[in-house]
Image (cartoon, rainbow, N blue to C red; front, side, top):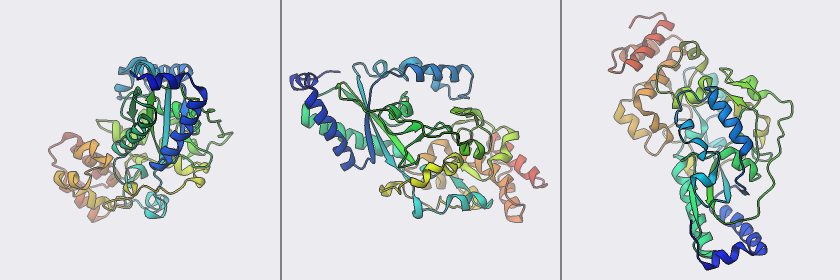
Length: 365
């Protein structure tokens, strides 16, 4: 990271740094971020917990979680020169603009898509906004060292956001804000400016276990401990192979991700509706009929998921997930017919899940 003389002078002026921090918060709000804070880079305790979690194998097949070593928990190893992290949150809860999440989950003829994935992919949008924030900072202080992230590199996003005062890490391991719940995206701006840091968020979970009780697969194995291998979000998005048979009935109609722990969290009664039009539902994915989605060929899948985070799982996993949901749906001629139409699919992964689903309905391929 390099800087010019103006930025070097700034580093020696606490009052100027405090004014800059205030300006950064204002600029971030103008760019559409709901909340922003500033954190230091000491994540030693979080690193210990991460290494323990990895050693227990709870990351499943997400081998990239271990690949980057301590760069995930030591920001200055990932981006040399980093001394502060600006953490920003952008709300995505669709509120009345989407079908009621609980009603969709209660109707096994429909497919449930995690509310974060109903609209456009947040990664690029959040990064672009953070890059514009970086440009505003540079315009004010001159060139400075920085790098922008949004779930796009080995970054401990939630601990950094906690340390920046954006909430606390709840028992379900999601970040929770006392006035905004947990329906928000995070992004980070690593900087070499010694800005004043915010007070970290305080835990307000108390004795509440609503998220743990609500998890369909028991993936929250202890308070603040998630076993990804049982998590529906992992199974339907990150997991590349067959979904373990004992867990398939527990997926219900969840075809991409899972929100049950967030839906159960009492703090989410305070969640604001997103002000970002790009995060609102597209293509009716807030309450889609399973048989209609299962009929999509690959070209249709690619067309309907353009610009969506769903596209990253590919058509094969999409069909795998839908086959499981159809196996859990009521037995009707329409459901059985849809499954039989895919019984000879070229993918062994799809064929296996279709055969399982047909057997659930007592039907032959």
